Length: 425
Ligand code: GDP
Ligand code: IMO
Ligand code: MG
Image 1 (cartoon, rainbow, N blue to C red):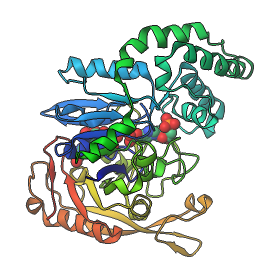
Image 2: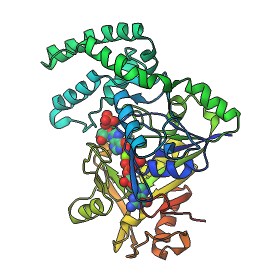
Image 3: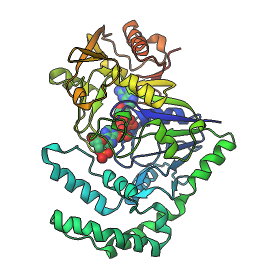
Image 4: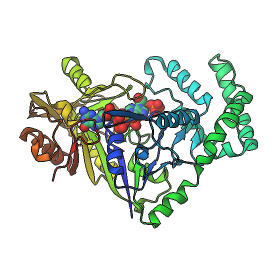
């Protein structure tokens, strides 16, 4: 049975965690395919909130096998802390497996992420400072340590010695920071972490294929989003992996023909954390209102998110880049109190109209959004359980987005809770 992908269509925090949790009811396995603990996926079940970083959002169901795929970068100490926190809330994490090919985030990655950001000064990207970029850079440079290296102390120490020679030169000579001692890192990773992570390490590529062969249903959970994608996002204001649906293949080991359903997650407006272009960005009172009503603060970093109107230009591009088969629209309830709502249907720059993002990023920085204004509904929709119960202006907003993007909207979120969604027929 082919697999389903959940992918962010904006700049992250669209509600991928909630949708993964929702879809996982009918799945057997949930695989995280890229990113690391830069992600924060919040799920609310019976009023209790879970903020997941590395552990796949399907973990809350006992029937799900949660898999951390080869495309993820894993800070094993964070993983263990997250597991402990879940266990203390009564969540069973014993089925969790981690790909041996996933790369490890090492202490020097975090340190270099912080230092590079400081060094960039006003040009900083606003990363999560979790070591994500430096860890993926080492993976590409072929000097990364992988999760499977935790199982072989000799190899682990050898690789660490080699890589630390260069990292320590950078730390001490360029950044004037103390050198990192190989012995300290090896003790922590091999003596403290490996005994606990070791039993979770698995050949996840074989697992996903055996699951498909056995007619099991697999959900691939993306982190970050299409416009944070290293290749297709607003470079350099992006993350260092490929959140787009194609990344679900490379990051899990499934082939392209194994994917059949690609669910793009879109907020009913747009948010972004960190620096970078944002054509429909709002400021002033309206921005404050959306931040407050949408609780737009980072799930793990606590940073205030920038907010703006829905951008159909981005959504159309996300539909292309990910082969979206449907869209799940989240946080419609956040717009409840507005009299009117704007939707960016195209951009304009130097007399040219753009239905898709301009190829040259310098143009993107200068575009003016072309808006259509639609009526608001000024009604609390958070208790709705059926699409037909929504006020007609809310239904019209959903249909308008569907038409302007050209992709069917299959789920609409009306609140953070697991049950707070409606399905257009
Ligand atoms: P993710 O990173 O894509 O998983 O999204 P986050 O969890 O970082 O941010 C989405 C936030 O919106 C979380 O706090 C969710 O609990 C919340 N959320 C998800 N869907 C809805 C919705 O339909 N309505 C409201 N009000 N909140 C939602
Ligand atoms: P989820 O999965 C929103 C942003 C950072 C920064 C840029 C690069 O919860 O949607 P990084 O630390 O990845 O090198 O930072 O990407 N970013 C996110 N923004 N949601 C996320 O994850 C993000 N993960 C990274 O703010 O702008
Ligand atoms: Mg998030």
